[in-house]
Length: 149
Image: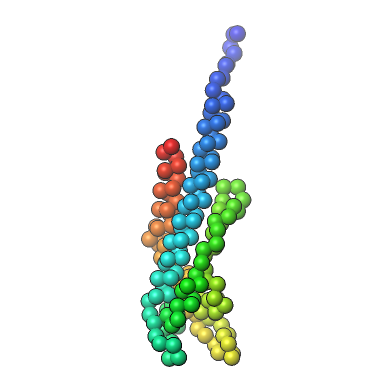
């Protein structure tokens, strides 16, 4: 065969690439779960920065996380997922399930028409994890381990 090219090992290459994709998908799912649980812990920590007895006015200032009274809001912070969210993507949701969780975070009208100022605790916890590189490190370590196989 003059000028011909023969390629061998394509099926092995294809198999190796498919295994790599599988390993990276698994690593991404695991890292997403780990990052979500880190966020859950950080949010719960934010909700533990101050406390006061039930029936007394909240001592937390507007802009600071709400003070701990009964612990219901803190206990309501949950992780849902991760679930597939399109090719190569995983989604996990983290946040409170208590009905007043949103009004504490964003401010607004609460029961009996009381206006509450924002007392963010979800966004600052997330921003702290991003700023410290904790979330990025979680993914980098998972992907590095998957690539090392």
